[in-house]
Length: 295
Image 1 (tube, helix red, strand yellow):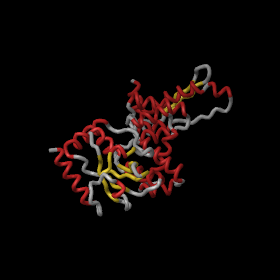
Image 2 (cartoon, rainbow, N blue to C red):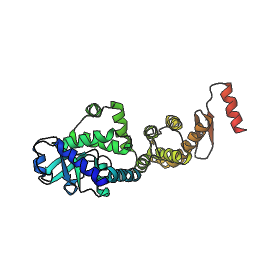
Image 3 (tube, one colour):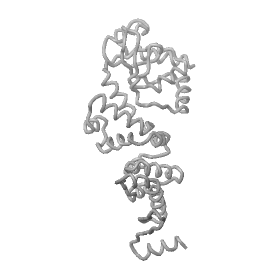
Image 4 (tube, one colour):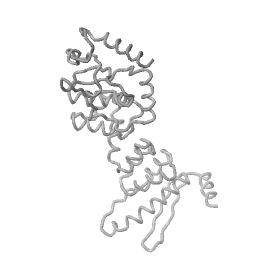
């Protein structure tokens, strides 16, 4: 039954190709015009090195394999011609991978004339419209368009149909450490968390807050509050640099108390260990709530 359906699909595709009298194994007959369609041997098709998506959900891929085995590849992939016997994917790499796993020998393909600049842009835009591209893949793709095609952020925003601020936020997350970027890729952090972390200039403090998000499951709002309340103290001498570790611990305590009490908390401490704890409150009700917390 599956073979019959594939045969019917092949006939339908060949009906769309004008001026081809023989079986479409002679690819050169099918590519005389741009944007033609042909059935190309799978061995002549190669992946796109500019592909923005680096990870493919294996469960979804296997589901697509089963669908292709049962019904054939319904939607053609898009390729560009490299040589007389080789083609490169412009869009549809997931379908290409699934078709190989399903054991197909040839694929229906739209053949387009595109240069290197256009293929990068097409691959990005096709993928950016999918909801499963993770933030790091999007950010890397944006950065490549800026680096390789010399787009400004304003031009890039227009090309991908996003606000300039959105593009800027994605680009900024590439400044985060590899560990934080990995958490974003694995969906342990959201873009909201990432933006809040970027508001913390001190890398060590940022790393402390990152671990709190993972360990305590802090919400985006709580992370934003911590970021807002975090003081960015820049060392002014070698002596003050030596106290950075203690300062980070104190700020960590300030953030913890601020999060639990819902208000700004300040802790000051000298080298002898003496200090002050300052808790802000706006009214008597807030003061009562704070006092009850410590009872």
